[in-house]
Length: 273
Image (tube, rainbow, N blue to C red; front, side):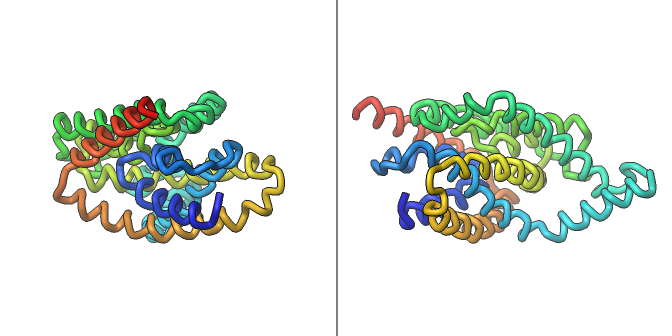
């Protein structure tokens, strides 16, 4: 992997991690469609660790919210008055929504890693993302906000996040759609989706470090990784700001149509070649 390839993939990661079109799919499909020969042992660690760049963008954008949630959450543990404020409850909902993906990722880690090496499987999973986006827009009433969240909402969104460990199933797309299925409005569904990405990104980054250390001469790979890290962090911050404004007035359906087009493009390209 070259510095140029890392920059391109970092830009793609920053854009597609938060847009509901699957960053993992684009990180798998971009080298495939461009004919880049990247060693397989580098693909999964790079894909996982470059997400730490988008983790930084989430933390920067939601810093005040995250700080308030942490302070109030720890305060309730000290006072033993559980869930009295919206931020205290939100802290519990974030933890609850994180559990399914953590369990799923640990139990099926080998299957998940193998899926990262199959462009066709990734393209098929993109159709799942498209179905979630379009169906949620058709069914969800979008008349609730984040303050009305219950444990059922958090668990439903958490289960949707668990499915997104497979490349092609968008993490933001599945979780935002799950919120809309629960009749939560688009901006608040997106906000919760971004907040629950923080513990997932941290955990994925830690596991990715172990894979990185197993790469021969991984020190030579470090500059490439850092370039992708900083690129995805900067681009990711800008995309978060744009997407939250977009979802205030517009639908997810265009993203679903894009996923369908990309999926069939990859399938046709694969069988034609």
